[in-house]
Length: 365
Image (cartoon, rainbow, N blue to C red; front, side, top):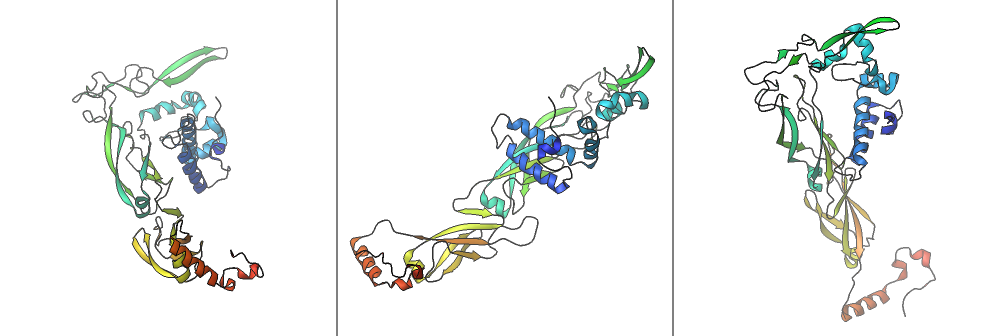
């Protein structure tokens, strides 16, 4: 199956900036993350997006990809670039760069988890404890793979080099070719007395609890990177990172627009007509709000600095309060009579938009 162009996968131009690449990855990774998208194809889409970002977010890998395409980044790891499909040619002339990289330290795999927060926790910040399952170095052999007190031995097939030299006969003569040693898989060593705890792998799976500091102002789709909390590296390589995708629950009556909090305030028509002072809930407790006489449905009032703290910046957003004048659904006979008398006493000139309806009467007889 042919791989799609990485720029096409992320939906960006070939001259996209690092920030544009990052934004595209965050949007698509959240869209296809298995925790949010149950579609069977979503998992494959997520892997494709992650693979594209891993290449295009790395300056060296991106340059290689731009020049050689997918073949240019095969085998490109933490230790360098082995030119993928051209590896055999380089092995023959330069003594096996691929095998050398294989024997060196390799960075651990990054992990991806999702975490759910309440509306208030995302806005004001909090600490969350999560459980993750990850691969770590064996606690008994410290990742060596051999039984404590013993050491791996030099591979007899390659004499510890991780490579074997082969000679091929062809129509053009004899050609020497250097390949990865099959017995030690390029590591240059053989474990003769494996650790009983990890069976010689040097690695174990553990469930760990991690405390995550969620900064104030995060929102749906925000990624938090915890460096060194991913899977253990190989042969002394650095530990991978843990990436957390935030999912924020909806609030009972608040909503959010960027850093502003939106709130709809219901008042009765008497309060709207005469004006009043009410208490409005905010993220920081109740705040007083003056409603002037003659206020209408849809009128917006601003409570300054009562919104969400700006992520990684100073200051807060505001809380925008939208009025909704509620009409009573049932009245007593006395209330109906009072309202009728009140309605008959109103002058049309005092009604909103009265100039549009001059000469037209809609009052019931």
